Image 1: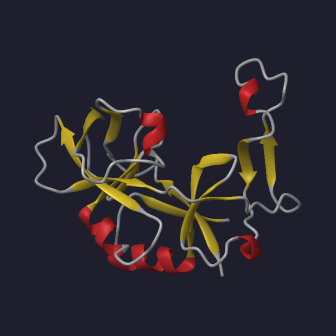
Image 2 (image 1 turned 135 degrees about the horizontal axis):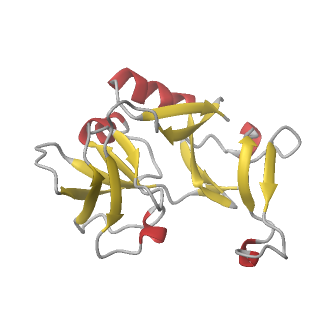
Length: 180
């Protein structure tokens, strides 16, 4: 099975930029949210709405109804209603949480940096991935999952070819797929 890193298209023309989710711990929302609760998200710069975007500071995934509907039936995703404040939009948006994390990186084929014990800012993350120049996922470690985060680098969302195809067929905007 092929896998792809799902990323926000930062070069989308005239795009909007979303700020913080109000009254919530934004660091935790990427993986854990209450699907019964409504959330509010500020627009930090107005522009064209996108079907997939991440808020600026925390990487919280915000998706349209079209994006959410395209993933109907895919396990291991939680959605919660999101009200975009400062925007007179009639569109529905949701925060998407992907709680499953996998140790799936092929370190021999990937190019990356890890946090060191003596890191001046984040010594608490020693041994975790700081960033990737090239991310390669070992499909044998993915247990056939369709969507998950990378353990030790949970800002990355990885999707299967099936998820990629569903989103592309739906014509969602703002989502880019890098081979992983």
